[in-house]
Length: 137
Image (cartoon, rainbow, N blue to C red; front, top):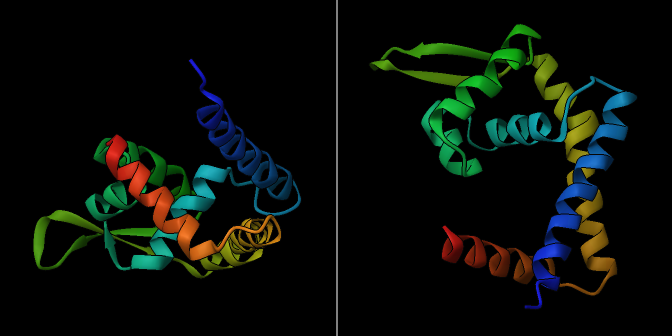
């Protein structure tokens, strides 16, 4: 069975993680997953934990666990939703926004540039990748 595409996708994800790790060594010390989470919070804030879980294709408990160290480090603020007692809202702090813009956003931009340099129309690649993810879920 030819699984070249799956292996190539895995390699891309691995290399993104490595690039984030190298950048993190020089900045806030955040992992690729943490940078993704900060970026997702920024994209949809104020966000409920459930919205973040859906946006990142992970479980609600996984988001809850991932937020704890970011909250302890002062990158996000998690508070009770005044309109719904059981829901928690997540927003970036100034430190979280700085960390994302210093490390996570440049990483996103580099990935976009790499796609364009390789001749991939970014928007089409994004649509195709999202469609594939939807079919696999």
